[in-house]
Image 1 (tube, rainbow, N blue to C red):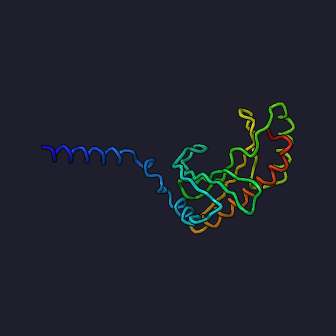
Image 2 (image 1 turned 135 degrees about the horizontal axis):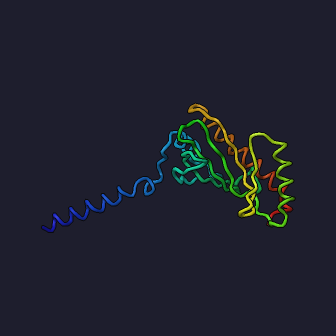
Image 3 (image 1 turned 90 degrees about the vertical axis):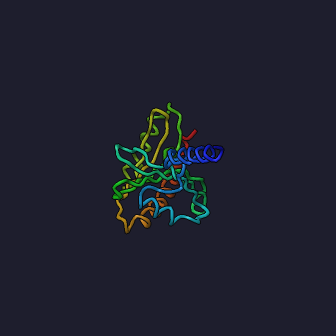
Length: 174
């Protein structure tokens, strides 16, 4: 009887763990492109990755990886995300807060952001008046064969771009 109870308790624990699903075992990416990217950056000492999981972004399923970069190519620590589309056809590199600004300077920030956006292609800046932040986003089309190379290029581009943008908008930052 005691063995049966121990076996039942063990079975219940295993069932509970398995019912937690992928969030309990988030070390495994759901999408091939995410897996390929994470394999490629494994061992980078200046880039820290955290697999978040599948999220809804702009009405589509994307797998999110949060990244933090502090290295020789930047004077700043960059915190951002890379999103891999479920259909494997694109990625989005996104920094939610390039700067936070005083709402009383909204028109100045809008002018500066519009000026930067008019001079660039690919990377776009957005002003969010709900929290007075400027964010940056880059949509990149990829294939299974190009995803690793293009993802790394997009990450490098985002870091360099947002460093320059931060310097340009630093007078507005709080």
